[in-house]
Image 1: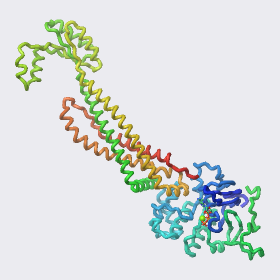
Image 2 (image 1 turned 120 degrees about the horizontal axis):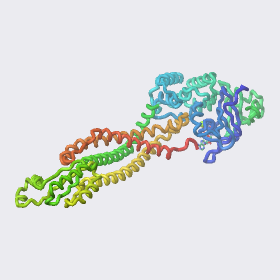
Image 3 (image 1 turned 180 degrees about the vertical axis):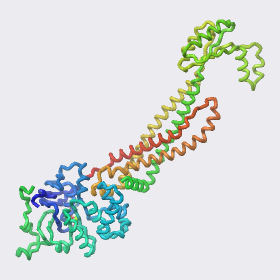
Image 4 (image 1 turned 90 degrees about the vertical axis):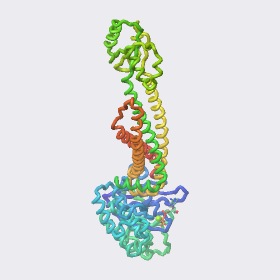
Length: 262
Length: 293
Ligand SMILES: Nc1ncnc2c1ncn2[C@@H]1O[C@H](COP(=O)(O)OP(=O)(O)OP(=O)(O)O)[C@@H](O)[C@H]1O
Ligand SMILES: [Mg+2]
């Protein structure tokens, strides 16, 4: 791990939307290549905002942000498409193209990535749809798919290109426990092949089951960064008598960026 | 890639069917006007060409010119490089020609006792531009009474050709501007109806031109559709008009280019597609929202 530069690094990042909402406040964190991170926190705490910043869909207001070797404050507009192609994204609202079938939506990502060989496109797409359990629905349009099915098409689209980094915003939000577990295991498997995975989720069971690094946001602040954490800070484990669940940090991992980490 | 772009473009065209047909319609009108003007100009040019070989200078001889003076004059004219043919028309021959012209009114000439027509030289030129020079040379001869240059028809045709060209150019330019404007708005509407999808494509990492290209293709398709439909009309009109024209202007013996129609099709496609692409390019440049705020 020490030989890699972090794939994600935020220095004192704040995000203030145009309407004045302060969605993130002085967030600093680093994520190394190959990590699997759960991003948790109540609704409106800034999880989607953080993912949007990572994709350079939004720009930070203050602070510095580096992703996959790019300084996102400085990146040229012409370099953004290339940058985004290294990232697979599962959007909270899926963002499927309504006039394309499930198959075409997934294949579309491959075309964007410069795949031309029709056979390669077809076979890769079918394989990934199989992985998310949607082979049978390949030729259906998003409007005719259930919420969970659309969500899985979105997962398939994010995975099909073999990204360096996967950002998943509530990828299991519309799924029953079994399907949610299946998708989470899929993401875990992708991660074991080296893809950095960041999953924003409200799914307590998954976070508790997988025991990965947990970043917790609350009202735009990073309040917890815990290796092998659960959905909530395990007070019993620390034997803390304060009884306060919104401790700024748990002490197990320094929140401030260590100098010389780059 | 091309298949994606074309299905995408066709879908957009279907969704904005009304605007698309307006665009195709106006482009077709533009091309129709253009083709009609082109056909007229080509015909006039052909007429000018046909008549130019007939530009001639007629020199009337004074009565009583001696045969020796006449043959000297004839050979002098023939030796000029700008003169093609010199024909002597005697008084009798002139009268016979006149009688032939008035064959349907024999009474009119019956009243003539004495032949009033002078003998003349009909001088055909190598090139019509020499008419004035040759005319002056003839006028200077003592045995010549009058010189007329028979180029009026040609001049009028040339003037008409210039006029048609000018009016045509103004109309074509004006219509092109209008068509480009309409095309730009069609693309603008298309971009607007597709903005959510454009956003998604960008987030998945599509390059700007990957996203823009279908809109430009749409403009090209509109232009191509317009040029094909206007060509069908022009071809039909041309085939039904040509026999009529041949009949009434037989004397011009118009040498019509057999490749005229294919050339018109090509020109129409070029201009139609060009205008379509230009219009959508303008839209894609002007109404493209920046990728990120
Ligand atoms: N485009 C926007 N413009 C203005 N304010 C926004 C925008 N997007 C989000 N916000 C605000 O920023 C804050 C953080 O929103 P965000 O979407 O990041 O929350 P979240 O943690 O993803 O919540 P959820 O779990 O409900 O998805 C909220 O207060 C929200 O109202
Ligand atoms: Mg969210």
